[in-house]
Image (cartoon, rainbow, N blue to C red):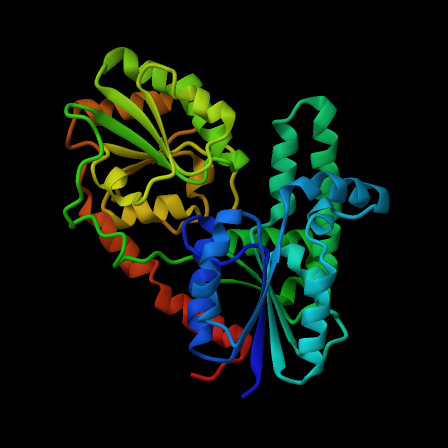
Length: 400
């Protein structure tokens, strides 16, 4: 049986952050369907301890280190060469040679690329099926970043948005299929790349509803009497950093003035220095990495997702809904989801309005109830992984 070459920009394990959740579930599923060959990078030295776990899914794997200290030099080379910095920062001769030699053996009939950065390791002339999962329209995310950066650095974000979109359009034209995480993302890319519109599709993220189940008994991580508003996510990711800083600066002080028992918990690994400093403020707790995020969701009064920069589907929202928690979020955090009426979800983009909603929830237990079983039922019915895998198999031409 011929196999599938899977190229990911980050080791798809453990599934503890947005891109890894998607890439891991696809890895696990595809490993049961075909011989799977994985080419990937390890950017966190701590993740090398997961190499054995990942290799168990693979017929063969090429794991390459990605050192942060090399990124500035790679960026300079990218600027000098007129390339998107995204590509320059992931250039690797060893991985490229490994992929080319593997395809040359005839053991591969399909290549699945996860993110733009990894498309550089695929020769468009290869006579194999080529599918890329862009996940999000990353060029638009760079455009959003440019709008929130100082003028002296905004130009580089605008440059990346332009160069990356041009590259993505070339890749989409050369590949058999381009995938995105939501219908909205796919529609946006069709408008940006009309020449490839007929080869653009979308497969949403799912959520592990067995793991994220609110009915289990979790020890309460909060102090007695606290009314916790919790944000979960990787806290070295700039969009998350921006979200919690805005909430801490503009929203939470209004809440704390009326409810002294309110606490804003920021739960996630590798908090940036600006995030760690928020922990010095009254009522704000920065946990850093935790062994299990579920207790923090299970015992929170509200899950908050005040993202002002976002693309696609937010796993943090899906996980909170799966645990039957009410969610308070911005429009951007919810845009990728096919929501239905009657869910315990509140939307606000204005700081004062968001604070008012949070205060109403704290004052009235029937408004955004702490236990929202309908949220759970919605996720079970609409966001199971099984249906996503069936769509993926069809796109890759894998027989049932």
